[in-house]
Amino acid sequence: MIKNAMFTSVWDGGFAVTTDCKVNTETKEVFDIQESPDTADMVNNLDEEYITIEGNRHSVVREDERECVDDYWYE
Image (cartoon, rainbow, N blue to C red; front, top):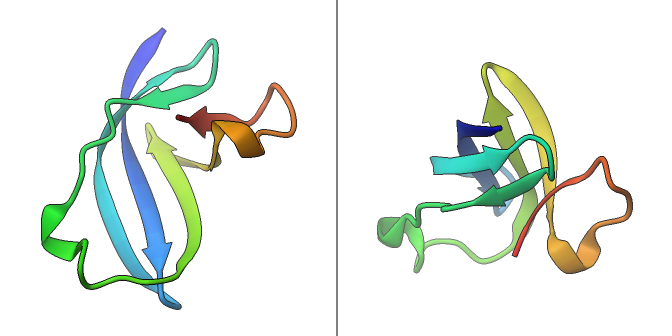
């Protein structure tokens, strides 16, 4: 099932950038992540990434860092 969600990346010790995305809840794939061009030049070090689906927060990783089938991931 495809659901709308929010993708949040936290940078430089706490600067959060949140954009829209979609999630396939069966495969755990996060896709159609919207970019925030206004902040691209303002951030340096990525601290964490997570998605929020229906009020619930889930960690998300790049596909090549995925450790188990229960991980939410993106390309």
